[in-house]
Image (cartoon, rainbow, N blue to C red):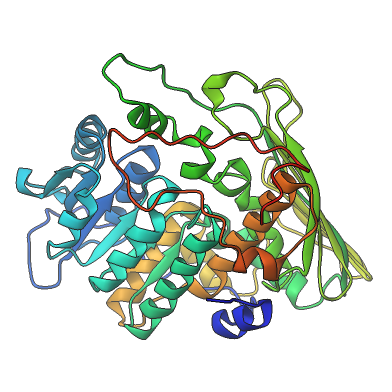
Length: 440
């Protein structure tokens, strides 16, 4: 199948920020829960830290929601998550032993139950198959980012997201900043022309190193890699896709979700070179070029004891915009200056009042469940796949050392994850060397 940038845009559509979305849910009722015909049953697929937090947010989003089923590759993950959720959420956790599924096929067993909503939070390599299966099963979906680690997987996600819309299913993406009210207000102002035409931009995600799990004697090679999935590009997509994609998504948002034409850049391993860090890079530096001639300069790194940066800065012909995720600064300077603070009067004052006390993570689930209740399922599929594609093209450019067009990135048949997974499988990919690993 051939995908061109033009066809992609036509299929996926362009999403622009035309206003602030409302936070339409309140905090979950404290009354004692009892099952009834309006109870929404939630299934959690991927019981790690992010999945456990997502389950709590889902249970807080609506007074008549329960956690009904859980699935994970590992028994200890499921047990720890179930214990935490039961302690924190009480009787809203109604997961019988028959609805606790463990193994690589656990997601299929969960989807065979009568859950209404699924939370997809397993490692990214599994996301295409989990999303496809969830849509085919007719479930509403919260889908943690990212969505695919290679182009074949992303094409599957595009097809599944389109099908979810056809089936009137909710699909909310885990790009949490899109649900952060100050950023909604800020980027809405940019998209409404408050800094004029964007001429150049910069986005960063420079952070420290993350967790690592020492190998146990009983683990197979596959289990060891799966438990340390961050460090294997066939499981995570590398940190540009797994983590720094948040900054790329904010950039895409500010640019009206239009796709760049091409990307050039570099990356490598300078500090995190120990074999325990698998085959991923510890830094990327890229330049994206957009159809209107503007350029965006992106950098990310995961290196301890280095200066942090997590921001998006836009330079327009009538002003500048700065969004800094570390300091909380949201400001516009120039012809029409503006700055967010706690007393800011937002475009939609009602939305501000209703969501001022809610975190962006909670906001995602508030809007997901409210849309289901109203039978107007919220669907992020049109734009979420674009941000994944932009991050994927950037990784391809850095790995290969070549200029990569978005057409070529989306049409690529380079596969990272295997077609099937098994506990005794041996699967190792080399560390990419620019100018040598040039397959696109």
